[in-house]
Length: 263
Image (cartoon, rainbow, N blue to C red; front, side, top):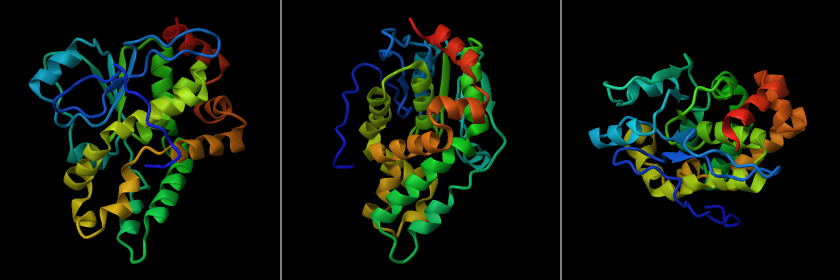
């Protein structure tokens, strides 16, 4: 973990699931204008491939209307979500492949270091807001339209999902430090992230590589999210500027987001 970051308390926002991963509510944060993000409206998680029948009962009680799966076509084929068949939840996923998979090949290169892995991750965080623009737009517009409770997830629930949640919280007016804290909560799952990488993703490519080299890929480090925000602010002036210019989420949509989610 980045030595400069302090791991926030998870409090009660995690949803305990036997086969779920990093499943949590993003409600409860205070905004700069004195309002509060409503609990039970927007959830974020890692992949849903190993949900148990007992997990299905827990998720059913959340009353989800929509699940947005940010994973690529390959990821969804390799680890399809295991969802209950007796409840009606709309599933949304985008037909796409990701370019950032080159990171895995890089880590097997001679001389590749943990510092190189962190720099690669920072590069990814500069690219993801644009690579995932269509998915982020869908996420925000669904909420603005009142399609909640809603779940957004990817594979580990860290990078794509982490940025999507961070953009939403910024637009709602949650202070930046709290936005970063929400992102850092994924670090509570670091050991499971390592196992996920070895068992679910690219185990042949990683098998002969020292985990100290590639483990930064599985971390939720403050510097990654800060790099992503810095890129958006440099190009668009602010996260709100990025949302308007790239996602088409203008001030009117932001007001709808706040109407739906803030009390």
